[in-house]
Image 1 (cartoon, rainbow, N blue to C red):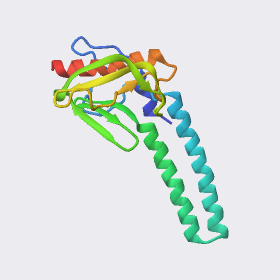
Image 2: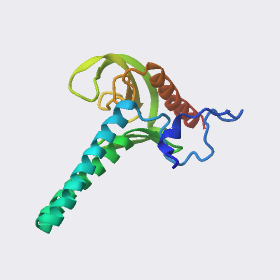
Image 3: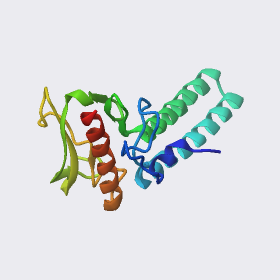
Image 4: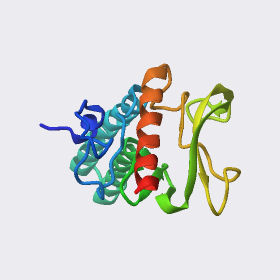
Amino acid sequence: MPLPFLAADRTFEATPDSALPYDDRDRWRRPYRPGPWRVAVAALCLMLASFVLFAAVLIALTGSPSSAGAVLAVALVIILGSLRLLRMGVWVSGRGVRQVGFLLTRTSAWERVVALRTLQQPVRWLGLPRTVQGQALTLVRRDRGAQDLPPLLTTHNMDFLGRAAAFDRAADAVEAWAAEHRRG
């Protein structure tokens, strides 16, 4: 079974006219693979959902259908939450850069992007309130600057914790998309 979300980090041969590995630049894609922390949490949530689904079947066979429906709804919320967790991250296309969060998605057109910078700064550890010193890829927009926007990528989020080389490759890929579309 092909898993397209794992194929984002493949090697490629760049053509002379473009540094980007994709022919269809209007399709949204993540320029890096989801990290092991993100995949592990999603797998644990899906395993929990399987137990909750099994409980819903047992409740449906022995109890009331309304209770089984409520437990089934809880299982569906867990499944949708784990799928959304896997979808989180930075996505790029010919139209712009999109930062997908758990509840909120921000999209910035390439025309509004002034710069993408990798900075050494305090970053949140796995999205928790605790901050540690790390690197962050920040977006500077023409209309807002960098003050209100959270960093696109950090070395201590669920995708890059303990994988500094993967962070560097992902930051370079996003910066290459920005350079390609600001040039064109």
